Length: 288
Image (tube, rainbow, N blue to C red; front, side, top):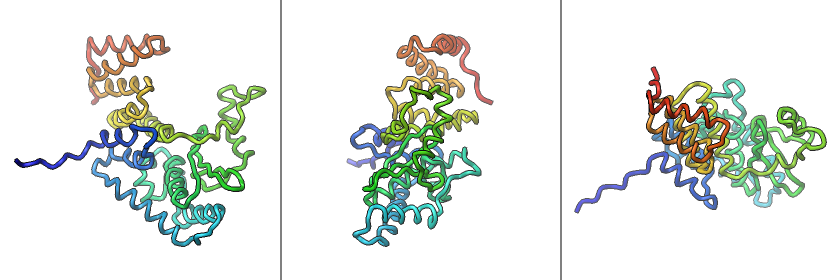
């Protein structure tokens, strides 16, 4: 009997396996796979090996008894000065800023992708580093013997509590969170769980594609978000709307009805019921 070679999983199935279990959530690897929507043949292991090589190069320079502060200072010099990682201020909304293999190649990214790389290198140096889903700007938090250090991965600067509080004020004003009911700063500096970090990365891409009317890429991101956040009915809804824009009426109706079954009293329920009726009656308009 002849045995056929095992077929490699699809990029989406691979992603699903990486994010299935919170106890074994492969954040860095899953973040790298996001680029497979544009680059299906991307060698994920080669990207991981490249990151490991960067960490190994720095580790070899450090004495075994280097203090945590010495390791952090060496990492920041290495990452921001020698390697030249920084924020892509000239093309912030380029989708490639969300693809870790592109960030490694260009040394330019957005806060969340720069943070993912910085955190991985810090962890390999024995430092305790976590991402912080701060409003408007993803940050890195490091637990040091002297206390916590909060770092802006876009600029490489350490931020004082006064600077963080100043950055938070526009968000507080927009949401009416000032005065006596003002939420303490510390609540905004809690470490983000891996699933939350990856959700934020994907939602950044989602907004880029939605703003540009790039429905095929938006659908690809929505497929990942539905897998990542199975409890988030709005992601099913948004996938349905992407299906509709692509003229895939059956899939659109299925997702929108699923959303309406979960959220029958949602503010947008009435409009979506009408959209479902239109999709059933006429079909979604095809893109030109």
